[in-house]
Image 1: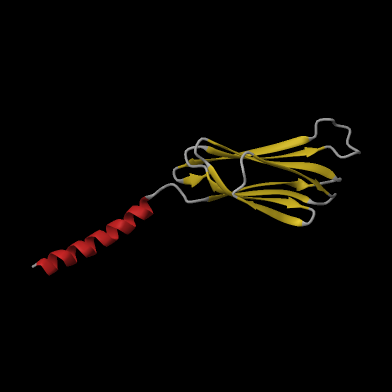
Image 2: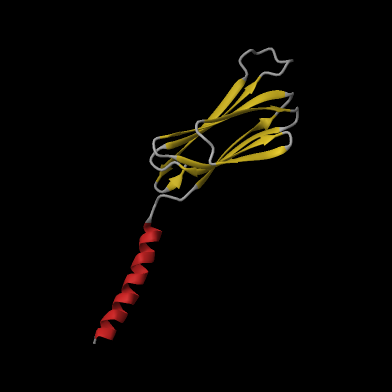
Length: 135
């Protein structure tokens, strides 16, 4: 009789344990991307990543003239400025989780020497967790 009870408990508890792991709606990580346009002239680009509340970042990858560079477990807020040549494309990728907070990705383009605008341009995108999905 004890063998039957122990067998029933083992077969009952094992699926419940794995079910608990699958019921977790908070993803262990999400991929957040922000892509810019192809530069029409040499420009200075500042990539920035910030988190709010309990969001976390495990890596930041940004585009340079020599290809992508990845910073694992960067200190936040993250900011780096690179010179990109004409024809290069702006790209910023982050792995992490917004949790109950937000992840904000931004890039700013400083004007090239032949641009009449003194303001440059910037683009930002934020990720939040909604219904267990990074959006």
